[in-house]
Image 1 (spheres, chains in turn red, purple):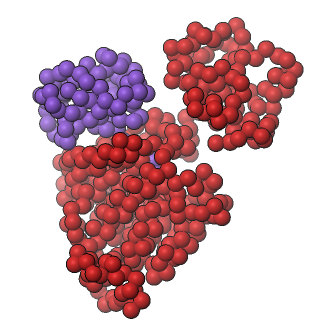
Image 2: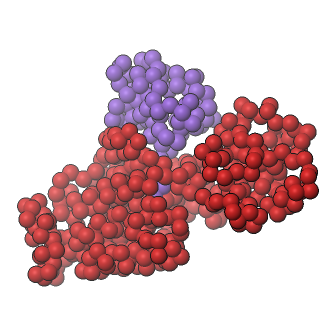
Image 3: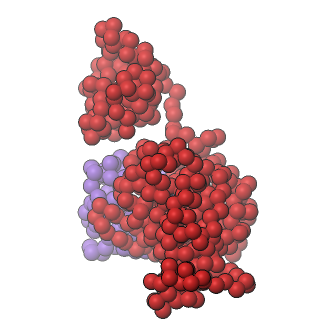
Length: 389
Length: 89
């Protein structure tokens, strides 16, 4: 069991706290000793979003004394489907402020430390040093590798959780004896291969399921009770409601956590993950048409073939009366298209249709353009009655 | 044996979440899978035929990297799980 730093100052529970935590105190697995460990523990939550929401709320309820929160983002309307630490009235507010308010509402005894910053190689080591446990609730590969390496370098356990659509993974990484993220996945996938929640969608309850598994592991580490997910990965399949366990071994040649590490400093993680500059969706330099121009030309009666490369369920939400060929089916169905006609391809935001235009141009189509911004931009600038999703 | 297909790759495997292939080794099973679903090949393997480093393969619950990799023998009742890295949060 990894040792949590012992706090030398005597810590007590007030009568109010004793009553608050009564359901913990009456269990021998927690008791007064355990509750005091929770009170003196300092846990850093990276991300106050999908995973961070249930995680921070449950750790607050459990009586973790200090909760650090790292997030630079603002609450968006589309977050509310799953980021339950934020309410409708918080849209537009900093996630840190909204999260702090929820945490204090649940448990005013928690000391909330806010870090409104993007975690980076410049600040991670210093940030992690003041905490006992780090929880990875981030949403991208560069930050996950950064969190991992910084945890190994500062000797803090990394309580890891990740989600995709309706599947999740959870583990406790970067402990001294156990494996780290790089033992598990030495390299990230190429950028753009695995969609984000915005692009691929996610079942709203899923981060709840995985985030609370992470919170459970944090509590177990603090209490030194139970068997943490060290050397194991829990795979969650929410649709099948199946939980599988896989063994995770420490790689004796791991570049960061083995006895002979080759990585002893934080690196450029964007570069490591093959991303240059700002992490952005993979954009392609393809010919574009703005929504206003398309509208004008359609109204003028021009013969333009609208190709919709979204999925059938998206077509049902809203559409431009386009001909639907989902992007994944385009290679097999390209012969349904007439290359002599002018084609405008569109999707939701312009990313998938950009790929479609690139594919069609490589297949010899010369009169094909991408609708810049997709139906989202169409709704914003041409037809506000079209719902955005 | 049964091969479990993870969510990000189901679109390349006829939307299936599991595929049955006859095989004596892990390598044969994966080869059988990518023969049936050729689109999967480039997502699982690099151009020089190596399994991609962000995709792990487990025979039951053991990582094949710590067994005999693609030469690991398999039995009928075994399950192969393909587990790519995911990062959503």
